[in-house]
Length: 617
Image 1: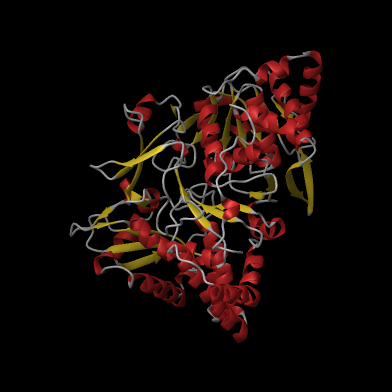
Image 2: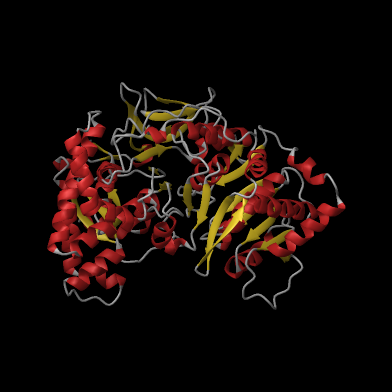
């Protein structure tokens, strides 16, 4: 890894794959790449591959299958499934059949499913398995526009029969027959939708109310995948890992559609729990993720080092120090001299090469992080390993990315300059970041009032993020407008900065700082279960379950030590005086967490109001 030489990340201005809609880009890729591998998925311990031509045949059959069900141009098909190859096939089939594609998180409960299908006027609902089918059957009576339910995995349902439900295989068979009987219809449907037509719906997480369906045109999607390749180029030699929810803008646009455009091979993990193992197998060359994942990798390394022998610990400390020295030179724009390069080579042999392989990033040309704030110290650690980690910023409403860090000019604590396809500016009165460009969404489905509140008369998207811009055009996010804390003493505090520092601890997964109109700051903390359990076992701390673990005085003392470390970095008025640990082991199914595993600030404050009040007595 040569952090001082990033020629392989130089921007590409050429058009890699022609097409003015996502569907046309895909079919141009099929024609150009043929038998090259497009995607792989691990099933029962074995990796299976599909070529571009094979996927093209599957997508054609599914497109015609949807047409046989009466899908009309502009009709919505919703997909309720974890990230898997079938999700991609169906998404592309919907777009190829002139439909509108919408994703639903597999963790959503039946009432959420009902609302999303009703709001989007879904006519065909795709479900992954028996668990998701049960949700669909529970609410279908309230969805008069729903015509068919398509089941991807019929395992355990051999005896099940329902005229409204068909399997994915049956849909393919019907599609192939429909295609033979209606010559030329597939080619006609592929050309029905144009750049300015609605292509996909991406629903917001709904942390402050009902989810809102953000409408994205083909033009906006294509602009982003073109522009992304000018800032972070990829090609058909690259490998990436698909594991984030495909109904989230990051995996859908920045991951899936960008890979289709560039020819990057997609590798699908077995399930969300196997990500650490799968990343070591895949060894991606480009790797995008969310801060929580990068924090977990760092925590795993930190714990492993603590468990290593004295010699290994000393080698790691020396090696990472050499990495930080090189990273600091690169960040400062200074030359890395031959002696430092030699010591860094030795550092790799001594320890850093093993660290990269332990995580699975030994082939990475670069990594990208977004969707939530991240600690600058964490980025600096990955830089010390020799891999540029590039922070990007954007929203569902701006189609994923509005600013991106240039590989050769990384500025810690910032989100980089604006992306080439949009404008970004700071509102002089409120400090809010505003975005304008072809990537800005078409509006919220059936909510013109909310759309008008979000996009002003001049076309500026009001993001709700507060920040600054420096003389070089680099933007910095300080916090969400609604999250800024004003203490009883009138001090403005940005909680995300403190929270990001604490999440750098291997014993903390997430935190929410409290203190608006209060005399001092407090925090709600969610521990990193695996690492804290390991600490408890090593220290012979007795516990019977997750709740008893969080109540143990020794564990509270451990978290207090972590908080004390962070407090020393802040002024007295910004320090955390008290905290409490969440006693429930949370997952994406819990209301406290978003589908991307972030604590919902407002929800948590309401649910744990008694515990919060206790900290202020």
